[in-house]
Image (cartoon, rainbow, N blue to C red; front, side):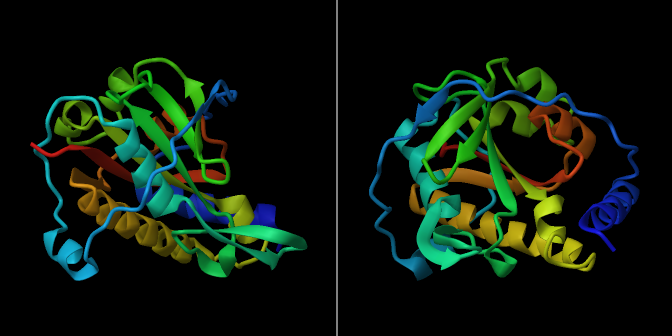
Length: 236
């Protein structure tokens, strides 16, 4: 079975589980690039961070500081190290490991309020540690149709959306790997929780969202599916 056929089978399962028919998304062209500042990793005891880790709904309604956003992305889903792999001398491996080391997960940043970053939709580029602007439109109206719990629309300064690339996964693995994609996403979510907690941020992973609406907001192709949203802001 070809990788395309496997992808189509996985998409059929995905749509069945979500009770949704495919909605063609309009691809979003890459816009300006916003470099994120280099930041030091948070100094926090691991066990103490695990003990403090919470899913919280209460946040201050103010801009997420750029250093906090940079640290959250860099140390949860940024590049950890480079190794010889897949025919290249320096293949980047993520802070959030994936099965086979494949570049399966992507992170998008939906900005409502952030220091020095205009409201809009951005894709995080881990290798260069920067945001790629996909749209400068305020995401709040669209998020009203994405989040099933509407309190996340207006109490999160930033929402991080994780997605999985089926075409990359099924170039190497069989259909069963559809399950592993969500395990990989869960590893990234735990990273986001721990780094956000170490940075003193308020955060919550959210699985209650409309897949088709989020796919349209992010401009996802049919071989890329959303797996999780992560709402974050400064603690109240």
